[in-house]
Image (cartoon, rainbow, N blue to C red; front, side, top):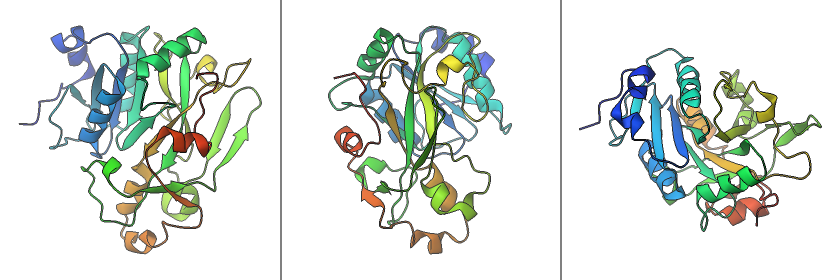
Length: 279
């Protein structure tokens, strides 16, 4: 049977499950769509995340693990719930991802996510940014299958950035840039603060940006900091839900495509993430 969800964030925060949360990095998945949730949870376990919590707008019958918290249909409910968890997780490191996203960081094949947060602590960093990379394939799509076992591509060309000059960076590109007519107002910002040290009262806006400027800078003032990558199926899912997807599918692969091998070394060599001073 699918585990019963907690009916609210309040119910979760007074439950024995909350009280038994282990030490270490906590994962939070914002599940607005039921995309790849079981393989995401497996991937987070392997990376060293201590406990993963799913904030779900939708019931996923393939999800056999908890805890997960029902959000209902309010589009702002996920942000509200995440901010409540930030207050409750005060002082803990949190990895926040949306459904259909897989986190990669430098040397992730041989190092645990706790090694990364220990380095960030030593750097006096509160946040690690990741660049979102759109995945796509011309093969048949199975939204519950583990994408790491399929044939996927991403764009190695076509990304562009606006550097604010103070450590803040806006990054755009990917599928929402190539298929602009299909996305409209869909968010196209590709640089996200995905791993952060929770602090009571330091909250995220609906667009996933922190309001506290200490959490808005990608790099340290004195040198470049590590960054990660988020391998995302979310924009492909958006396209696949359209009636004209079959005509779009034929245009997914282009001269700027590269095959994805899921290795951190490939992402480092392509400049899609960097280790900073972490060796």
